Length: 305
Image 1 (spheres, helix red, strand yellow):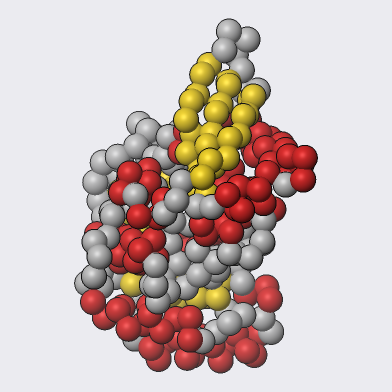
Image 2: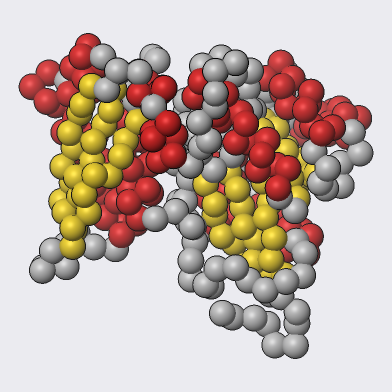
């Protein structure tokens, strides 16, 4: 593992929390310098914790991109909510991401309510500053600083990269001294199978509309390396009703073909080899109540209240 000569190494966990659609996954990818967390325009795209690994000098920063924090209703919502707060409590540092376009709106209420319970250093990150006029941004910065004594307040655009380097440099100095936990060429702790399933779920989110993406999940059932150095992958998309299966398939299977084609390109880029992707859609009623599905997503199965 690389380490700057004569400089003691640093390594620590940074939990990235925020309301849905505040740009946490985009920020994680920007800091890592590669796509490790899926990004869509829909809220609650991230379900389980996604770890992105950032190197800066002698520091290794392990980012934990958590599900967007919101008022939970369904069992899956409660699992995502609990996961986000668990990661915040376990991290060395917490970064609260705020959508500068939305400002301090009601989407932040569940966060601000529980924030005093987090006994860790907390920084505020105002994201999407490229979409906000400077006078409005300065006013928002004052409002954010009044919420609580944050260790630092950063203003950046994860999408354009403006201000990301300053945040990265700060995190590199803020994580505690200690040995690195991962090899220097590793960008995430997720397996290729898990990442491939997440890529396909991203394409489903982008292609489908309304509530359907929240009632489906994707699992990589088979991953076989072939003699020609390509990979054959079989994935299963689980939905809860036959009517949903028909929507995913589309007329004459056109929708699932488009989703598979888009996913195959990204998976091949991620794996670095040609990919043969086969998608199957199965109905599994009430999969959201199956503990095994939660383990696949890296979530704890919440008991009934």
